Image (cartoon, rainbow, N blue to C red):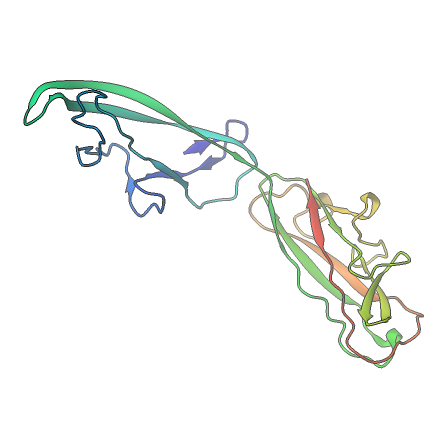
Length: 240
């Protein structure tokens, strides 16, 4: 196990024979290293040499906190190698040695975001569109505290977002929480913190995702543009 001494979290890993980890070594397993894998085994001038590749692969498990993780692998070498001889071996080199290999990795904060599209549907007039209330689901590294921002889209102007169809547009915006009129944007005063999550507020506990239920609304009182399909694209970002 790779271990984080600060949080106590652990990451299981395996030691493999190849990069695909199709075969792995178990604890206490013996590896027979013969002349077919040891280059220069009978080289009189350079002596025995070669390399035994070991591949490390982490295994899936519970969500963990960001930080430094490390472990130590103890390897015992037992060898009996011919160091002099041509047709048959004259002199052998034998011995036993223990070596420790440190395995370490740095886990950094990361998140996954599930954000459904916003579809206002169809209406004849801009004031006839109903507001949409729905959540964004965020799962982050265990213990992560963060803020969530949403940019102004592709056509933002005059302090609001716009759905666009050619030169025509419809102003709309997003608000958080859904019951209020605080604009959800990407600037410092408009961002939403993990503490303010609709469900599971606070630093992410690594068990259940945090949801942020917001309201998307067509801004009332604007003229109705020509009929057509109006679209925009928003980008969600997370800052730790």
